[in-house]
Amino acid sequence: MNGTVAAISARALLGRRRFLLLLPLPVLLVGLAALAHAAQPDPTDWGGPVLAGLGFGVVLPMIALLVGTAVLGAEIDDGTIVHLLATPVARRDIVLAKLLVAAGITAAVSAVPMYLTGLIVAGGRLGLGLALASVLGSAAYSAVFLTLSVLTRRPVLIGLLYVLIWEGLLGNLLAGSRLLSIQQYTLTIAAKAGDTTLLPDKVSLPVALVMTAVFLIGGTVLAIERLRSFRLTGETA
Picture 1 (cartoon, one colour):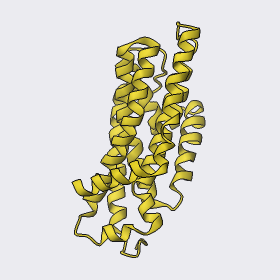
Picture 2 (cartoon, helix red, strand yellow):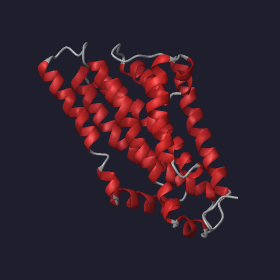
Picture 3 (tube, helix red, strand yellow):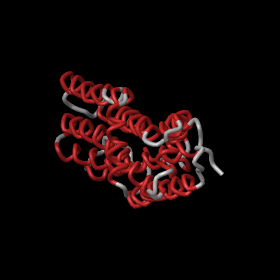
Picture 4 (cartoon, one colour):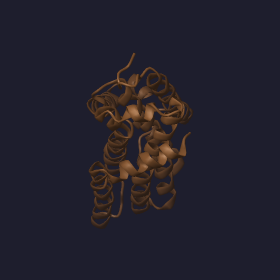
């Protein structure tokens, strides 16, 4: 991994207006949990929808989508990727640096509010479980969305279809689709690590951990191979 590429990527992301779009969702999550807890301290009725429906269904994947598609996709769109590819930095190091930045920012912006929300809902054990699941989910989502940015010119659209249709709709209706749903992996990890029944765990913990690693490693390898096919014009061979 190249530290210079990572530092430049982080500064570029944190300096873009797009980063400001990441903040309302975490604030909404924590605020809604605080309001619900003030109205009804027992989280049995509202804890699941807030954590699963909003936290893991919207906040985490949307933040990952915005960051993951921008960390490399923005350079591809505006053509500045050619300057990076013209340097002697290996394509593998570029992808790893970009992935680290995307996963790190996504984890920081999502794990902290998820921890605070868990703290409000049921205490520190649940908060830590939610934070752990958010970190692992951030890595898997970032690998997928970064890969989409080098595979297609419409990574945000395809990413939205994955989150809304595959995970949001089919993931709740078809058992088979859950095996390819990062959302389901994070829910299981959070439920087991947080020792809670508020979250559905529709896949086993070993499956969740293994498939999270598969998405992370597989997405990273595919992104590296795809970036190697880029010419200095920014087009693929």
